[in-house]
Length: 466
Image (cartoon, rainbow, N blue to C red; front, top):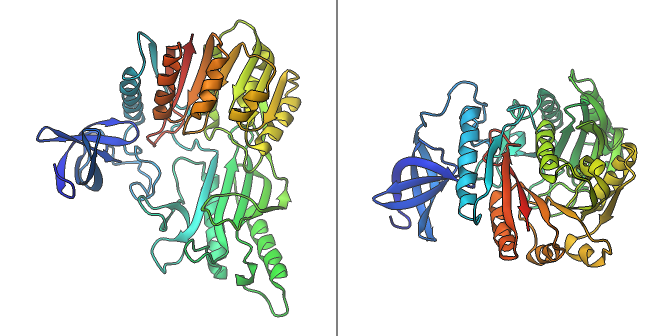
C-alpha cells in the first residue's frame, strides 16, 4: 500500500476503537467506522506502527451480518450509531472480541475474562442528549440534531433517534419548528455570531422526569422584537412562549424543569455563564438500585440508567461482601458508586473535580440517609496529598482519557490489596494496567458491560490485586 492511494477490500474484524481491519497483498490497514464483513473502499492516509491508516470513502457491499430493516432514518449520516445495522447479539460479540484481544495483549499471567453483559434496553436507553443547532448544508434552513459524520459544521436532524425515548424527539421537533418559524438564527462558530447553540434534554427512565435547557448566546439583539420592545423583553417573551409550547406536548414523561442557559464561550461545548429557570426547577430525580439521585444540568450521571444498574452490580460483586473500613471512590461524579458501596463500608470518601457534582453527591447521600459518605471537591492529583485517611479499598472511575500518570503513582503508593477500575475507554484502561502491573499489581477479573448499544463504545470493569 502507498499513502494517497485508494484500495478496496473486505473488513476481517474490528479492533478497538471502531477500526475495521483490512488486509491487501499481505499488508494491513485500519479503517475507522468499517464493520466486519463489509466491502469498503478507502484512501490510505499514513502508516503508523507497521499498519496503514485508511479513511473510509464508501461501503461497496453490506456485511452479511447487517440487517436492513429497523434502521434509523439517519443511520450512516449522523455521527452516532456506527453499529446499529448489526443485530444486538452480533454487536455484543464484536465488542467482547475487541476488548479481549486488547486486554490479552496487556494483562500478564492468567486472569478471568468474564465476557460481556448487555444493556437491558438496546434502544431508547440514553437519558441525556446535547443537540446542536445548525444547518444541514451551507445556507440551508434551521436544523437541530447531531453533527453529520465527519463534519464539524453540518447538522443532521435527530428526530426519530433510536437510542433515546420518543419524548426527546417530540421536544426536539417542537423546538426546531418554533424557532424556525420565528426566523431565529443559530450560532456560527467561525463568525461568533448568532443566538441558538444547543438543546439539552435529560430524562429519567425510572421517574419519567424531564429536564430541558435551551442554550443560547447573549446576543438577544438578533431576536425579532415587537415595536417599542427592548431586546431583553423580546427574549423573555420568546422564551416564555417556547416554554409554554413544550408544556403542551403530549409526552409520556413530565417536565421537572425548563431552563434557559446563556453561554458566550468560544468553545463548542455546553456550559453555563448564566442559568434561568423558566418553569419548575433546575434538577430532576432518577433511581438506581433502590437509591434516589438528584441530577442537575451538568451533573455527571451514567447515560444509560438501566445499564448503570448492571454496571454497579458488577462493581459491587468485585468489591466483595466483606466489610471495608475506608473506601476511596476517586472520580466520583454525583456519588452513585460511593452510595451503592456505602452499606459495605464504615466510611466512603469520594473525590470529584466538578463542584456541582460534589454538591449533588452530598445532597443525594443525605436524601438516601447515608451518613458514612463524604465528598471532596478537587483534582484527584492534588487532593490525594491532602488526605490524612488511608484507604482499605479503592474504586477508580476516571474520565475517558484515564488517570493522570502522577495521580496513578500516588494511588498505587497507598498499597491497597485490591482496586476496582471502571473504564469507558478500554485503551485508556490498557495503558493504566501496564503501569499497575509494573508496580506489583495483577488483573484478577475483568468484565465488559455494554452501556452504549448501537455504538462502538463499551464499559469495562477490572479487579486488580496486589
